[in-house]
Length: 502
Image (cartoon, rainbow, N blue to C red; front, top):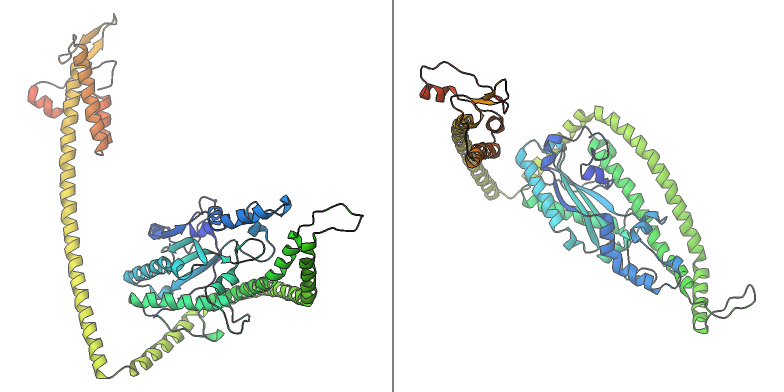
């Protein structure tokens, strides 16, 4: 029985794309490179192109309204990257069923992979405000898992860009609105609970048993669960920071509104600003709103500073947790035994609560059917292995025959080459032809001899016999087999010439 988890990821594209060699970095020990070919990349978009596709129209509309060049945003991707308001270019969650101990059988890994693929296929339909830029399934680590990278998209802003990167507002626009919002009860937390439930249902549909959601005491956690709890704690701090940013957003719009009021007019004495009468009331209202919210702004600044302090404490806590995780690794075996005993008790309890004998009989029938199917699968596997063995035997026989044919062709090409190259120079520089050489070949005959060698070499290379191709291109001579036929009693003879060596 595996647990569905969805901790926050680091968003390392080098790790997700397995590009360690590209950046001159060593491959981590936990990655089995022999299985990296089994990894699946479902989505892989360039971040800048994605931002232009998502926010391009809103950015163009916003810049078209600006009368001052310094207020225009040239690139929204760079704008978010440089932002000090806490927005991230993209967010990552790591989706997984089970842990290392749950993947002892190859078929379990395949089912988990299929569940992850189905989860990604329905992601954007379920979450219209989250645009996928990356979805990578890793099969070369201890447990199959999915790195899911997305950009949150919120709409309906009255100031600035109409469409923006905002995680909290994107979640709320998809309906995840907590009744009493707090650090532990926010839109992102509600969304994650829903997504874990969706993934759990997909897993069950593929025959993977899913452990019920639970909140455990720290002492009962395994090392992996302890690290996951740490990641979730850090994620909650990030979400609280995002919530504060969402609260500050209307006040930022307030400032933007004041900045965008048309102040063009006649020049007046120093210290006096002229604005149009129609904008005067708007300025007054904005000023009143700013005054009314001044205390709230101060409070939000204090809260933001408090979040920064918590982030620092979280970093320190993360280091402490890493040290604790190393200590817990030594106790892993004992904790696993305790967990297994508890799991067995839970299974016995579930069994006692099942419906009577009828359901037990149905389960027994299904188990019998399952055993029968497994027997059929084993039988089919044996048949397939036999067929494979027969096919390989036939392939090897055909390959041997083809090699023999090419050896014969090589001997024929070399023998034909003797008609042209069985010659040597005398002391006067003239050629003397041997018994096989022909001194008065026509140009067509000369080309035919060389063309025959080139033709044979071409097909030998294409069919995987490069050494025979080389023989046909560079050497001439009479093979022992041909020599026995044409000169049964003749002694072996060597030929010398200034062309390819014999």
